[in-house]
Amino acid sequence: MQLSIQHTTQYSYSDPLNYSIQQLRLTPQDGFGQRVKNWSISVNGQLSQHQDTYGNIVHTMVLDGNHSEIKLVAKGEVETGLSMTKSEERLPLQIFLRSTVLTAVDAHIKAFAAPFGPLKTIADLERLSAAIIDCVPYVKGATGVYTTAPQAFEASTGVCQDHAHIFIACCRGLVTPARYVSGYLFTDDGHLLESHAWADAWLDGIGWVSVDVSNRCLADSAHVRLATGLDYHDACPVSGVRVGGGMETMQAGVNVWQLGGGGSNRELRKQIEQVQQ
Image 1 (cartoon, rainbow, N blue to C red):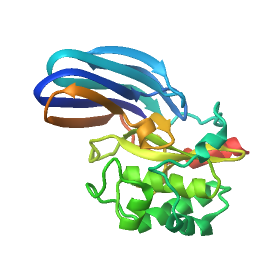
Image 2 (image 1 turned 180 degrees about the vertical axis):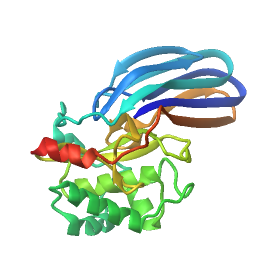
Image 3 (image 1 turned 90 degrees about the horizontal axis):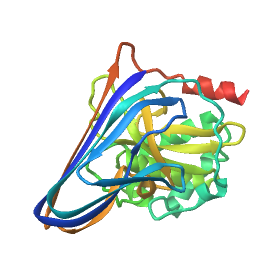
Image 4 (image 1 turned 90 degrees about the vertical axis):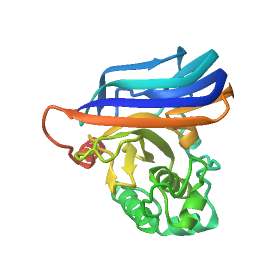
């Protein structure tokens, strides 16, 4: 698929903004069945680029002086649905067994995950994913960015971020390395106008397998990866701090549309199994 993406984030302030520093994980990379054809980020501030511990491209944006708003626009074209190759990981896999506040494994999550272990096949991951979404249905606005996996699991409601955190917690509780993925999702009807999240789990002999719990599928050509990390805070598209500004109002919007014809497909399982053989 040829996907065109535009992600706009705008902050408005009631008082003059003296200083702001933002970390932007808004740049996709080649790999995992995708190729970036072109990409740009425009901001009303100074940008510097680096690569973080997890291999994400990160831009640091600095804005000083008297400002009343910050506007970020990331846009470009990404080709998806390309052939998959066996995943390699430059970091020790033990890092992705590390628990965080957002992915904590409490007694309830541990007991829930136990019947699904050990996780050895793609089918094992799919069964775990299906059980999570059955227990924790998607309800927009029910949780926030600081909601932990145990809190969402206990509330039996959440969004894609919560589903990813619960899945990761379950995997780590079963001694399977797992990580958080932020990105975009193309939908035929355009109903998803915001960024998306899913999770990767490591299977021996296969590598990373991407699971979209919220949509009951493996990540496929409808998904565009932005960043990965141990949890949301490592991979969130925009984060930062400011001095001044008073009350802050934030508006964000994502548009993902397909260039040319054809629809999304579900070819990832076949590709991964071919790699495993």
